[in-house]
Length: 118
Length: 114
Image 1 (cartoon, rainbow over the protein chains, first blue to last red):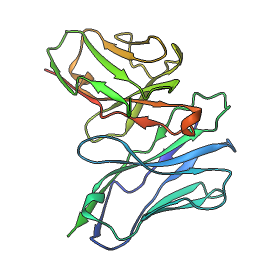
Image 2 (image 1 turned 45 degrees about the horizontal axis):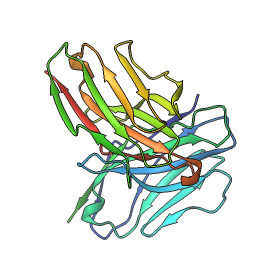
Image 3 (image 1 turned 30 degrees about the vertical axis):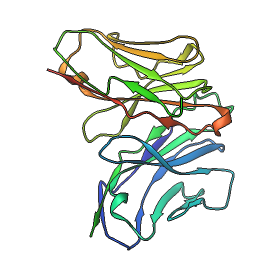
Image 4 (image 1 turned 180 degrees about the vertical axis):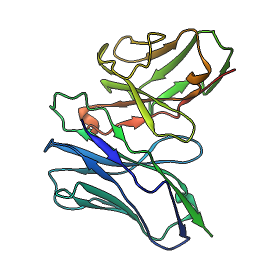
């Protein structure tokens, strides 16, 4: 079975600085997707960024980028130029590839609460 | 619709009562998921629908929990004889190959059992 681990329950960063959130996962599959979701106090889960396992290039979305290390099964999220609005709980998630016998459900880590200090 | 819509947003119920939570997925999304999130915790998978069928119900915690989906669209999660440990946010999500198989979430239904 696949597992996702986020070892940092809480992180803090100064506004305008850079912070990296860690995520590791365990799988025997070769085809899968990885995601970072943000959950602000409103509790809406917002997709931040996704990475296909077959792509070697790290995904980027504006101030958000990932460091995907497939051999190490590591998928960290870097937030550059942190803003007050980035404060939220961040979840790393794994999903089996399309066509897999699995249902495609997301498997989540326990989350990291990010505090942004003004 | 433009996004996944859930109702009610908040529900307070007495222990022992039945509750129904509704999810209206993004139009055209064939896959629908229910998750549960207890206070300060991660997300726990409950059930997955593909169209109107539920090939994966493995996350339903007890037989008090059931869900159905009709017309390949709206889904209802029913909790019978609610208990205090059922208090949580219930999140619905949907996806489709046309969305790149990315899963999009609703805002959740916050259930409090008193």
